Length: 281
Image (cartoon, rainbow, N blue to C red; front, side):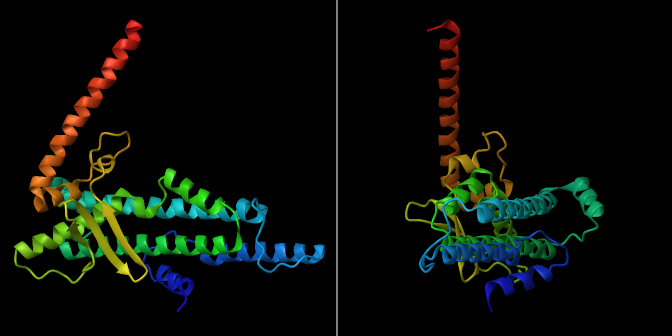
């Protein structure tokens, strides 16, 4: 089964209408671009074989990328919002948790939480594949740097779904729940067998997830920008913090201490610079 058909069947099977990537529409845009280019080549009497669209194509650059950008933004926005609500529910306690359950008309059991978390990660990965497929098709038609520039733009706008911190949180969330079930000697549901916390030869941790044959996701957990929360707009990854503190306590403690020292050094350097500037030194 071709991926486009598989993707459409997956999106149609969702209980809630979720934003997705319009593969059919985007493919039509690329086909139109190809037809227009070949027609132009025929009128000029030059062969079209092994030729590509011009570097700046009004059809693709004016329609294809804006459409894809909007769709990616909608997918990431939906995923982040739903993941945040799910994790907020899991981490809540006492009356606040009861209030959230009632407000959302949800049933409070871990199996349902794990299933929803798995569904969200599946949604993220299959849409990531869809984006990768359509950009690969674009690269076959265009001999230009626009595809790579678009990828960089998507990353800078934080609409690359595989880079969402909430995806990392959902993976940690699942492992934490799975470990809780094992410790309580309760039978855990067979979800996310391919999701795990791994360590390299230097005992540095990373998250690994496999849900599709064509996608293997590895997230490096040594990046201080992702884990300290000291930057504007940064997220405090609570589930990941729990996972690392329980699974590699010694590494995590050393990591926190080194980052505290680095933050102190940077703060001291900043204020020294401000004082010198104020004094005109």
